[in-house]
Length: 226
Image: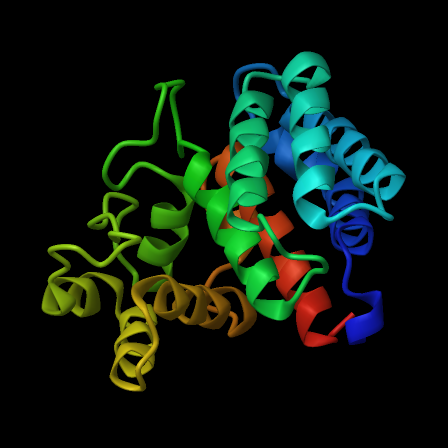
């Protein structure tokens, strides 16, 4: 995807295409209602239409608008977490007139970090978000890997590397190169999703499968592989 084509409408549009193609597999993972894939197709369509309608406005405005629509009209219980993630991403993009590569990485991390891997707790608990689950699977560990402190306070680098190998190695190398904690997590996530360490449809839960598929597709678009 060229820099000129790097916008929210294209990113969520490619995610919508992927979700539409794999909706049945994700439905099959949903042992409760059997419709998580269907719900996510509709939610992504809503998000895509919303951000495209605000394409002339800064990304933060488009994301806030999409979050509001999803909060009031989203399908399925997980839609509330995507709305929260979109709002959080919008706050992080305050003052950005356009979307850059680092912004896409931040958006992906924020969305996955806002979604509990299971249950409906108000906030994801330690080791309980889809982001934690993806990084844990990349390291061959259980989803209950130690939560990564986005601010870096009290972070035990050894624990991260041991828990998330080989994703932890990418994290450690990025830290050694001077990256902040959030950027280092982003590089580890990129390696996990783009290096074949994690197959979205084999993450075990419909919520993780859908979230990981969205993240992987966005990163593929960012890297120009689509």
